[in-house]
Amino acid sequence: MKIVDARVIVCSPGRNFVTLKLITEDRVYGLGDATLNGREMSVASYLNDHIIPLLIGRDARRIEDTWQYLYKGAYWRRGPVTMAAISAVDTALWDIKGKSVNTPVYQLLGGASREAVMVYGHANGADIDETASAVARYVQLGYKAVRAQSGIPGLASTYGVGRGQLHYEPAEKGLPPENVWSSEYYLNFVPDLFKRLRSEFGPQLHLLHDVHHRLTPIQAARLGKSLEPYSLFWMEDPVPAELQESFRLIRQHTTTPLAVGEVFNSIFDCETLIREQLIDYIRTTVVHAGGISHLRKIANFAEVFHVLTGSHGATDLSPVCMAAALHFDLSVHNFGIQEYMRHTEETDRVFPHSYYFEDGMMHPGDRPGLGVDLDEDLAKQYPYERAYLPVNRKMDGTMHSW
Ligand code: GCO
Ligand code: MG
Image (cartoon, rainbow, N blue to C red):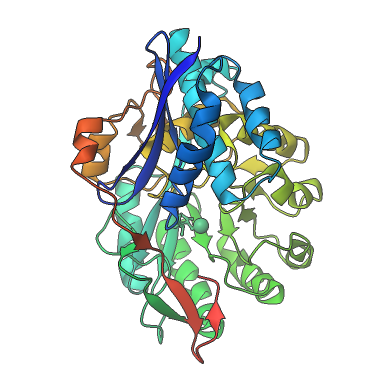
């Protein structure tokens, strides 16, 4: 079952997406997401210039061997660009494998370990009242878990506070917008937000919060401690996680569960975090951490140490990644939760899919393969437009993590 053709489709139906399509001699094709928000064209080039020539003529059934060939064969290992490209190939090969044996991918991954996958949505508002109303809307839609972010008094704009009610899209056309940040204002404010939400929504609703890599370890420890009375499902990315050991300090101070990993590319980025049980949820994704094959290795390793999965699922992960994530989530034993930011209607039209949301849970559907397609003619109507995520500066102008 040789790969005879491959192409990279870059389109922008509301936001930019990079998709790899692999086609076999039997005319079976598979799709893989290769989107790297704000750096899309680097992965498109990596695939077109360096990977596709290696794939033509290869046996599409040899998923693991192809992964190892691309990872070990490049000599230059890891990194977001390389790993997004490998992820796209791996995902497309799983899609092909499923279609060629006429079965949904989760059946090839050991079958369903649960009936459906619990997801969390994003509630945000300019202030506590608006955020509380946004949480109420998600509860009405059936969500059992909601992430809450709010504007902070004294700061003109804040991470996670978007435009509109269901869609939050941080990337913007043109040059990167600049935000202003104060960890002091933030730390003084966030406990009030969760005090209000817990008293308004009762003990059952899962409440999550994303710190977006902005605190120092001791500040993160303080925040975790101050949120303990409100029993969060998790506190996400409290510090930049380049230094995995910094979580030892946070862990010693708080019982608020910790989630990390959306910017990680491989098991080596989270090995200490998992082995020392410094986190509760690992958030690595199909698109950025080596595809379904490598994500399964991370999950299997995490299972041994009682760490659950909680994959990233923002809008910059295309419907192809969301479909792959749901097959992974449904099958892997130590699944925790899946992030689900709804795509816009134009994105959904370009990527028709079988996955569906019902009563706070999602299911990948039972179509063979991943159950997601790409309408290439429609995609042509949405050409790539350069866009960037914002950058962040402290009030005195010092660059800070966004
Ligand atoms: C999340 C994330 C996103 C990222 C985005 C960057 O938890 O959903 O932090 O909102 O900022 O994916 O491209
Ligand atoms: Mg996040």
